[in-house]
Image 1 (tube, rainbow, N blue to C red):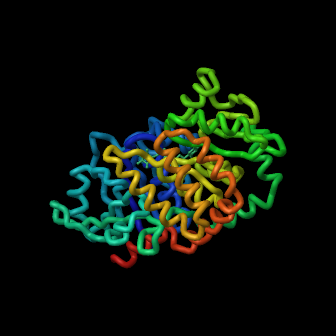
Image 2: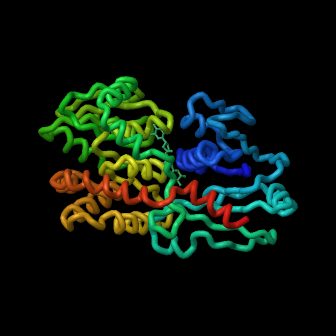
Image 3: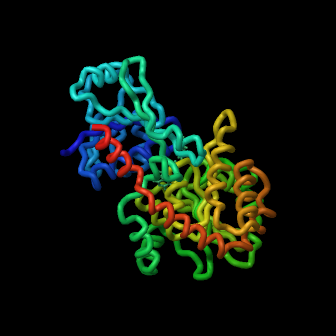
Length: 377
Ligand code: TRH
């Protein structure tokens, strides 16, 4: 039977909250034939991910998902069979009352942030009784087998492999974005938060023997790039060369195209949660610029991921990668650690592909959610 799903998303900042929920909603429709409403409290963020969307619309349809504006002044709505509050956002009180009143009772889930920490395995899928008298379940994405897994569309890895075997498609995609790298240049993408040490990395790339073409989607790192270049007002389309380094600013592209961009590069710098996962599906070495938390909790998350990710890498390569990730996230000088990492380029590349293929053996997050609901009924 076709179940209905309500997914609630509060945009805290940036694009991760809406990025994850829209991806999940689309997959529920496309691969599991569900009826999905996605409630978003800030459509401006949504419009960036989904060009063609209307920032003012109360309701709109995209890829079969009914995207609804979640107003502060909540208007009554009949709850769906499955209710997901993403990242502990607070459901409207009247909606919780409606969950209580509905027969049959909906499955109420809190979709948590992604973490590789071990404690997640003990908490994944646990219920908690709410003051309303209803049970809410905690659903944890993760990298370990006893978690909810990662968002991954069916056939994603196969599509990437086909793309990699077709240089014309790759070239046409890049040309569509106005990217014409030198034949011997390596492509790196840079989607990151502010980074005080960025200049040292750019200095290094500019003096290397091999040319680098750095692709920078418009966003929070642009200020640091401007300072290094000594220019102001960088916008999508801007291309500047210093030494062996060409920097090109890109427009924000739709989620599917961001995947292709990651696939075109030999190394990706990513951030937050969703781009971090996409870079892993890209099977390329990466730097994760983790989202900073007030209590410094992000360091434990970063190291928990590294502990899993380093398994299978030589000790030297693992140490070099750890140093690069730590320096990047601490905003420190990058030149020494990056040059040490370069020595392990080939090993890191094959490791990234193995990591991707191993993670892809696990059920994807959407399938796990659908299964969780089936088992619960
Ligand atoms: O944007 P992020 O930093 O988002 C988040 C939020 O800040 C959130 O509050 C926080 O909790 C979380 O990080 C950890 O990073 P993220 O998660 O990678 O989201 C970016 C989204 O934007 C992702 O879905 C990919 C998408 N994207 C595009 O669709 N096109 C683009 O051109 C680019 C650069 C990204």
